[in-house]
Image (cartoon, rainbow, N blue to C red):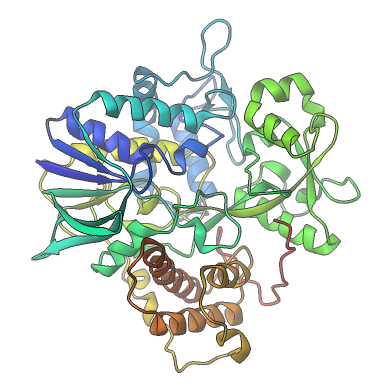
Length: 504
């Protein structure tokens, strides 16, 4: 079978390697260089190794609790059941996870985990270690790699995915395949502030939307609570709080306990909103205090964070550092079954582009790398199996029908008259489809995006195609958020939403 994998993070490269090892002809197509993407930036680690008193069942329970009860139980069961095997596979492929002097894997803890069950590499460089190992494995395998290739569309014939259209150096061409696996990541650049690299423009989800594939849960966007609030967005791992760091307001008080009994180790959505609100109240960023951990431990456990904070003028071993939330991870995406199949025959989706059902309304920390490895392998194993379409949620599939352009609501004429630019779109999404949402704000966002869409010319350059993808995904995301009237997980409706503090 001729298989095309679009994307080269942990999910895509795992799928490619498993497909090749099963005897398939595999081509990896990637927008930048192989290994570029979110995987290499992941700091925290991979959940799934259980010590004394811990178990896969407890990991599953924590995942479902963090997902506000909306996680698919069957998908979660697959995740925790297959996790140890995928971690062992990463080790076999050369990932040197951190170990104690006696050779035991060191386990970290992050928010909403009841136990330390997260393996990490290089302290806070887990994603980079995984990306390097998988890229090396692909280079050794008989896998064709096409770099610098932008995904323009998935080619569908008679209801079946037959390949992809790519743009390389400004020239479009078609690549045929018996199966296409989307592993293009998320869409962090929908928002003015994000931890994602520049290539995260929702290309895979947009391509799936254009061919009518089912998508779901786009309203659930995770904002990482702790981004260094000085200079370009830089993530300060949740594992720092797992080691004992605290969040303090301008008076030095641990304010998150006002919102949740677990304080700094509450689910990410809770912590991120608490930070945003406290920063707005005091008119300045909140601070992360890691001084109690000590300089030697910080430098050893978090060498990357230690280096970057010092480069930006902070000695976090002796002073708290300013932090702020930023868009980080998309829980929704292209609907799949437990083997990565989508509603389009021959089209699979794995990793952040997919909506497996694992994350529900809020992703549990360090489940994303695990999900990519687990479902990337499962998709490859399903290539030769009979096709079964996943079950879809028709309510979510139809959210774009919930409002029409003539429904003006609380229309803001001046804002709607703003000319489209990527920066204007990102500001609109940050203000109205971000951490704190209101019905008026969401309605305003939908109307604005639809007007921009109606006036948009046909894209020709890659940048214009990225903008078109962001617009399409913005409309679907804002519409989904408008349709979900209750607050749950990362989707929080607030009728008196105040502007967020501009700190990054």
